[in-house]
Amino acid sequence: MFFISETGPFIWTLFLSSIKIDNLPSSISVYLKATADTLTDRLKDSIEKRPLISHLQNPVELKEFITKHLFERSFYYEKSKVKIKTDDLDVNAVVKLINQLLTLFHLL
Image (cartoon, rainbow, N blue to C red):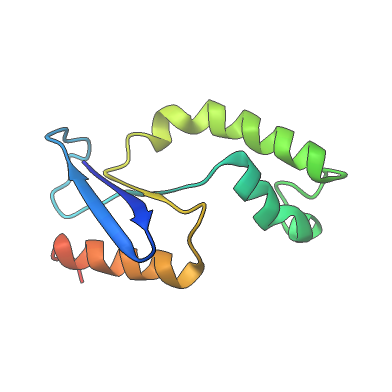
């Protein structure tokens, strides 16, 4: 299992463990992990464009919805081979990390 976290500006650390979750040798699962606050902030302006959350009336309901679903799904999310904390990352940084991982796994 690989876990990536930001330890400073543009400094990444890679933590390895011996836990094997995926049984398929050519597969890799990636969990783009973010807090409920981060997800709420990222989604609040597009509630009406997203069918799963379009019924929510405001950011408070959105955060409650996200918190509930993160909790319910965390067991499965945490089984991912790779976890990337995305709270303080922009899209380009996340893409760069994923590309590095794909290279590391020889999948790119």
